[in-house]
Image 1 (tube, rainbow over the protein chains, first blue to last red):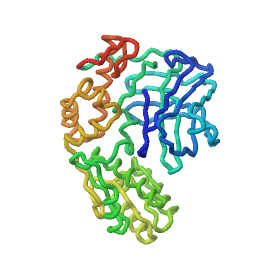
Image 2 (image 1 turned 90 degrees about the vertical axis):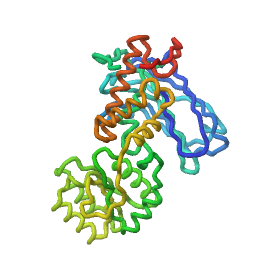
Image 3 (image 1 turned 60 degrees about the vertical axis):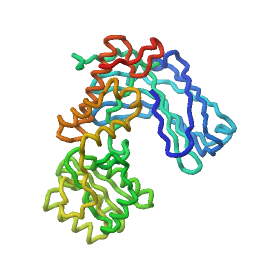
Image 4 (image 1 turned 180 degrees about the vertical axis):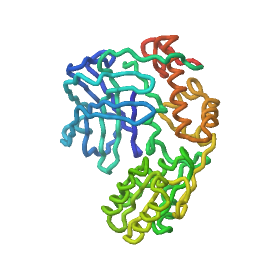
Amino acid sequence: MTVSADRGPSKPKIEVQFDRPHRQHEPREQLAVRYRIEGCDGERIRAIEHSVLWYTEGKGEEDLGVHFFQRVTDRAMMPPMTTASAFSTPLPQSPLSYEGVIVKVRWCVRVRLFFEDSRDFVSEHVFDVGHIPPARMPSART
Amino acid sequence: MPSMVSNPFSSRHTRPGSIAPLDATGSPINLDVLLDRLHGFGGTAAIVGPHGSGKSTLLTHLAAALERQGGRVPRIRLHSRADVPAVWMAIRRASPGDTVCIDSWECTGRLVGGLLRMVARVTGRHLLVTSHGRAGFPELVKCTTNPALLRSIVGCLPDHELWLGTLVHTADIDRSFANHGGNLRESLYELYDRFEAAVSQIQGVGGCRSYRPCRSCGRRPQNS
């Protein structure tokens, strides 16, 4: 699942590549991510933020934890000088990804672009940590 | 790819601020017009409406718009009368001219609410509140709901073109609206369950939990 939100005319696109097949990672292992930014149409970027975080998803209150955060302000590391970049971080032991009915726990890589004109663009890329089987509804309504 | 798929009706996508404010016809609300109206009231007013009619969503967007105008806008959500001291503190800490946004003003009660309103007026703080009634404030806007509005909101949720009409149908939306007497929040919660049930059905049949065409099996979700 990719969630993107922008507040401006240009439509950037961020392609993220994970180092594990099927974006399936184990707790405590190293997460390595490469990404490519496209579609900035010459707009100047002021900063790029990389984060690895988990969040809960459901009907009620939400929870969130930022595991890794990095802000890049070096122009040599941004478009148009560089369109591809990478970062890595060791994953923690928990929480594990969980696909419940009432609540879900998701991990994601978030890349956020801050443009010179104060607009921003966020791209999220979900991955799994661990192997908890998804919960099933007792009886699926039709 | 991860087996997980985001439920578009989860709080993450439907909480106040995530959805653009829409009027009863499903059209985007012009915040500038409302801000002008608010200034015309001297900066203090109430967003009025029943439970789940979009008051908190509108308050969130108006507060953000006020901040963009350069103001300091403290925000408080009341859950019960026990939270009233937080309102008092927010009014005290605010500077003259600031707008304090308070969600669920009715929790203050008539007497305490009147007192807080008076303190804010005397000290030059503005109050923008949500309430089920006017509670002594000028009425900035009255929020109402109808099935078409809920359909418009659902049509704004992520990836709706992939699941609307396959996993969730217009009839489901109208049914949930009727089941909850027009309460949009409760209707969206019911649709959350509806979505989970539909996805579970796909999982049960094909083992693939996605409303997108599956990359591994190529299967598309079927009508449920």
